[in-house]
Length: 213
Image (cartoon, rainbow, N blue to C red; front, side, top):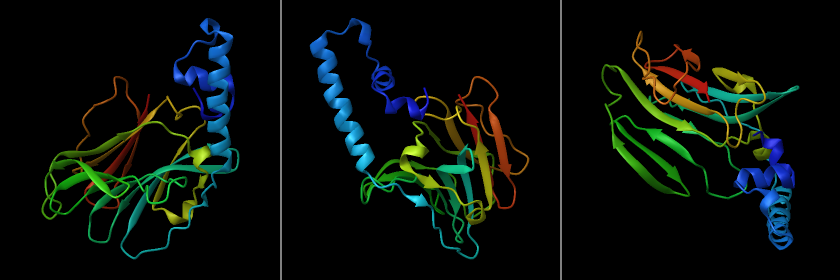
């Protein structure tokens, strides 16, 4: 299922797991009212537009974007701060203060954050000494960058992973981010088939971005 499918009533019903063929007229009318309200809210939500990320000396950024014609839609990016801490950022515009992201701090504490609340705390290896093996920064699904409307400016990033249409969608595809010791491979989880893999070697530890089903 692709993002544009959600703009039609039939595609939206499939996304909900609802079989229109078995529904009564009253049930379809109720679902239609819900769909119309969702679409109204979606169309009224301002899009982000071109992501304007200011240049920070010593900072590295790696984007994952979906190509549609001449436009690159930004679905997430990995940021390594000048201090050497890592963040996986997901652009959002429709809720002030949402700002969902994953953080991996120098002391080895990894957590997620949304609406100012931290959760999924895990103690990993510190980033202050020699990095060994691999550390996972999460698997990210449910992609709809065109709806969010964040446009990727390649010049604002140290590297860009460009994905063709049809690979990442509301139900399809996932992006997995790992930190790895030079020469190491990330764990095969969660893929059963070899995914596309991009390795960024301009910082330590290396940043590995994998994209697959």
